[in-house]
Amino acid sequence: MLLVFAIFPGLAAVFDQPFLLDLALRTMILATAAVSLNLILGYGGMINFGHAAYIGIGAYAVGIPAFYGEYSGYVQLPLAIGAGALFAPITGFVCLRTKGVYFIMITLAFAQMAYFAFVSIEKYGGDDGLVINLRSKFSGVVDMESTLEFYYVVLAFLVGALYLVSRIVNARFGMVVQGAKENEEHMQSLGFDTFRYRLACYVISGAMASAAGWLMGNYNYYFSPEMMSWTHSGELIFMVVLGGAGSLFGPVLGAIVLIILEEVLSGATVYWPLILGAILIAVVLFARGGLEGALALLERRK
Amino acid sequence: MEWVLFVSQLLDGLQLGVLLFLLAPGLTLVFGIMDFVNLAHGSLYMMGAYFCVTLTPLLDSFPLAVLVAIILTFVLGIVVELVVSRHLYQRDHLDQVLATFGLILFFNGAVHLIWGPEGNSIVLPDYLNGRFTLPAGIEIPTFRVAIIAIGLGVAGGLIWLVTMTRMGMLIRAGASNRRMAGALGVDIKKLFTLVFALGAAMAGLAGMMIAPITEANIGMGDDILIVAFVVIIIGGIGSIRGAFIAALLVGMIDVMGRSYLDGFMKLFMDNQSAETASPALSAMAIYILMAAILYFLPRGLFPPRHR
Image 1 (cartoon, chains in turn cyan, red):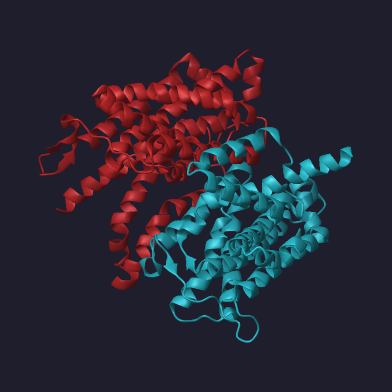
Image 2: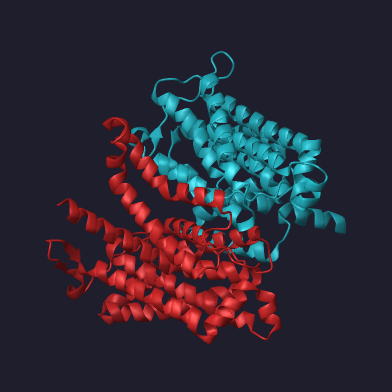
């Protein structure tokens, strides 16, 4: 799958379809965010319904310095990751005290809080957001303005995110987090302070999502509070669940399928949410375990 | 003049609180009894408004249109419960969130298809569109008073229903221990369809009340839904009393924060920073309230006694 992404610019060039390259870029950025969500949702059992807030934070970390004429990627990227890694523990400290539905709702509430906070800051465009004139600059290393170079930067982030998640979930730390999802009391009685493990996991995921947001801001040349809206958080959850929560490549698969679905449906009719909504309901009602689960089932049958 | 403004703000807060309370019972009871997260509740609010948009010119009477639209949203609630929600009670919250998120997309698409992308306004009859004047020279729009009166009336009716009637007793029994109530011979499935539809009708009513003021548009339920969730979480899931108190609290804080916070903050910081910070802070006020309450009381003000 990653190999397809790696040679995709070549294919797009052969068929002379720059539009496809654009689509692949968007897919990879969203996939990176979905991979970060999968770390806490799929492996940690924490249903974060406010994950899009980090995308927005990452994008603002491109936009606000750019607003003041600071285009250096060496400033913007650490700022994005740092802001995400700061927002996560502050909110996580309250969120992780709660369980189940309360957790879903309070993560949602914090994302709304960020959303409304940025809506009301008139200086940075308020409701409408602002245009970013230039992408982050890494002078002499990569030229982000070149679509092809930016493409491989995004791909590198996706691969990096996948590598990081696979390392985490196979390490002792990740095992504890997964154990806490299955049976928190059991892990506590083994002497693990599960709250701290989960909080750490939550922060890592938030920082990764902010990095994805940094890519998104660069990709769009634009940032706005709309990026944080809870419907986007819902889409991210959908990607993870569609692909198969708790499987490494599931979120990437989910992102690809969702983007293609959206693209095909929105090309076919303006009433596409109607059909997408019906598909979503059908997937939940009839296909459990996501696509990855369905594929695994098929393979076992062979 | 100061007082005129204050009273009008007070009424604004009351109006928002009342609307939130109309949305809350459907969420909190469905949550409390069946442990079901219904994100599509805001869509029912939107559908109520749109039904009213079509029916008002058709029936040539706003009150009549509201009555018929309430019945329609009630029926719609039954349909949604039978077709989608019913199959999700045994699933985990993630599946519920996703499926009802799908319902939102579905309803938004459906409204776009039927009513078109633009907002639709409702023309109020003259007797609701006027204003009347209080002794101190305070003018109040009649319709605003009507909203508050209807909201408080429905609230009273609901509290009567839940605390005084046999059906209310069954609802409370279901909310505190679903399986025990089922074992004692309560038809939980039927009861729940009824509760769901009742909640839908109330959400629809809220939509009908707001539509003449803001007009009905696609996605109108999406933002207020989140605030309604804040309300039921502050109030404690499953508690009508908690929802009522929390709805008024949230309504007041939201409206008052928007109008008075910058004045208050100017007391202890310079004008300019107060003017930049206060809109952001007042927009966040209700979420900060919720976070603070959950930090100290992770199950809200009036937590369910038994789960």
